[in-house]
Amino acid sequence: MKIVLFLLISALALAAPFLFSSYVISILILTLYVAYVGQAWNLLLGFGGQLSLGHALYTGLGSYIASNFFIKFGISPWIALVFVALFCAILGGIIGALGFRFGLSGVHFTLLTIAFAECTRLIFEHWAWFGATAGLFIPVTTDSLSLWNLRGDTNLFYYLFLGLIIISFLLCRLFVKSKLGYFARALRENEQAASSVGINVFQTKVILMALSAGMASIGGVFFAFYQNSLFPDQTFAMTKSIEIAMGSIVGGLGTLIGPILGAFILIPLGEFLSYVLGDSLIGIKLLFQGVLLLLMVLFLPKGLWPFLQKLWSEKIK
Image (cartoon, rainbow, N blue to C red; front, side):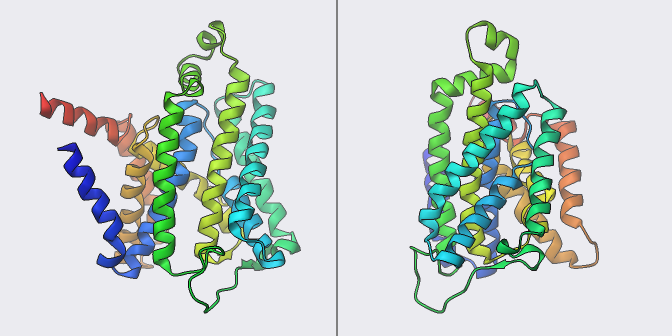
């Protein structure tokens, strides 16, 4: 049964651009993007127990740096992506080290991540080289599809993000089974107990922060070339960080399917409400996310995926 379901989902995913309109594909691209960056964020909280609400910092830096490299110097985003991932991983590790070195945890660490994201937003709003408040725009050419420069229609980006989801899922699965994955879950459950058995808590936290930040920045690179325009107040907005986090929370923290499932619930339903209501109710997506989060906390605190797994196992019995 599982194999049949997997094959059906795979066939539908591959055939989606031939079955649905460009509008539906654009929603699927946004969904896959949120699922991917949610997977990156899930490494930090879901497995490491460290709550960050500033991951828009890394997706935003990935977007701006790769875009400006392409606009100013003609450097392919594939080349820039390597630099971006390394830079954001180092930055994430430094931010983590600053917080963990002084014993910041819980809400204090969360505030630190928010502060760095907000400070970066203010810097980019006044940095003329990156367009400041006027924005940064990637040239849209009429040439034929160019995978090297990430120029193409929505179908190109759909398959790119689909591939990104598959690769990230497999890598995260390897992470879960690795020594670092076991260390992360140990300190998530009890830092003192983890430290007492010889786990370097500080080092593990910093590595998790670096991996999560670097992984998130890659999603920012691809999404920037899909959008073709960047504005600091949108790219680094805290609502972006919340959107990244919501998918994992709804789908199930500390699970590999959770961020993907959560994104496929949040994004399509949010877009559907916006389409139906239009401008009649401003902020409907944020309201929807808030209500959904409240319901999850009250009735499914572990997320939807663990609940579905439990139902499946009971059905088999």
